[in-house]
Length: 178
Ligand code: HEM
Image (cartoon, rainbow, N blue to C red):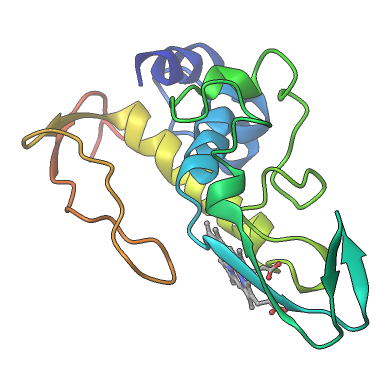
């Protein structure tokens, strides 16, 4: 979090609140969101149906077969990711994953799916999540009640197994007259 905060302080400063237009200049913040979606995709399974008979890597798949694509497992696959279980946003800033985006062009990172039925809310979701996260980091310190446990529970949208309880502590107020 300290690294993201430094980036925000340098790029945006402490006198104005982060705007949506600042996000393109905050690569580390974007990397945090990508890394979170890699390890904890809100839509862990994508569903498709084959329109015709096909053969994928030796598997015969008849037409009209219901197919589940396990986005969660692909995001943790050792064949594609170095130290896959480590939360390391740096992998999207430097190195071979730095050009990778989340819009369905890179098949080992598919948090919004891919193709004609991919998520139509991708741009809106990214703007809202990245800007809100940036403001939360810029304006507050976060005191965690207990420890951070990232265990996941069962469900179609990958809920947390245990709630995360944090108390915001005002760090800077970009609206000093309020
Ligand atoms: C972080 C936030 C979000 C994530 C991770 C997410 C993820 C996904 C995923 C994985 C799919 C299935 C894609 C596929 O089958 O290839 C999907 C579909 C969809 N999403 Fe999102 N989504 C998010 C936010 C939103 C928002 C903000 C909206 C609308 C404003 C939205 C609207 C939809 C719709 C309508 C579909 C169904 C598309 C179809 O079946 O053709 N999503 N989303």
